[in-house]
Image (cartoon, rainbow, N blue to C red; front, side):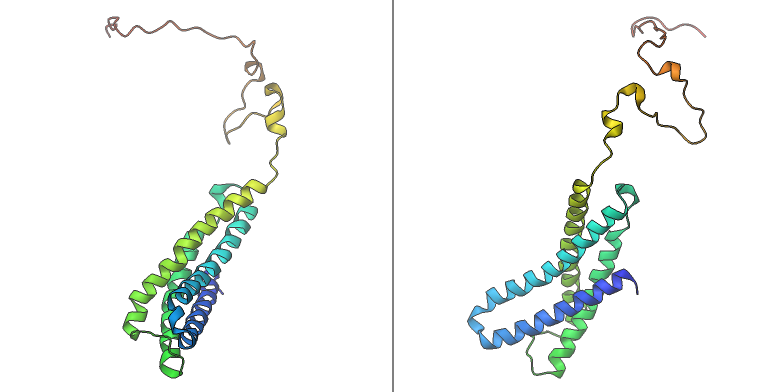
Amino acid sequence: MKPWLVRGLGLSLVHVIVRALLGAALMQWPLQGSILRWLGLAVVILAAVVWAGIDGIRDRRAYPDPDDGEDLTMRWLAAGAVTGIVAGFLTWLVDTLTAIPIGVKSILFELTSGAAFTVLLVFLPAMAAVTAGRFFAGRGEKTDESDRTAPREQREPATVAGAPAADPAWRNDDAPTEVFPAVDPHAPRPER
């Protein structure tokens, strides 16, 4: 199964459970609606943040070079889209078929505006968590400091594939140099 589909379906399940529990809790404690809604929102965001943070940590450990990592942006955007559409449909279905008053509007609203909000609710915190996970995993790595602490003469020079290696005589401070005359910007140009 695709990684984005697993994340999308998992977060859809979290979203539907939170909304069902929120509907049941509002029936029991109607005066605590604001606190309960904020708590439900925090649970959905926290689920996305934890999962995406783990993705960021795993990615940085697998690919220490930031340019080589997986494309977690598209993975989490697709997961957010799946979460929005599937969670919208399932909450509408639960509200229609059960006695739990989730408080959905209509199927059209849940699959358009509600889904768009859910996509942002998953994607934006997930991207922040991926970035933080990569950052903290990168900080914890032990870097090879032997190249940095070695004297300049002992370091291996960078080579380009297919290019001839540099002459070692030109690497030290006593290498012969050629001095060029200074360029005077006001001097007349030579005729060609």
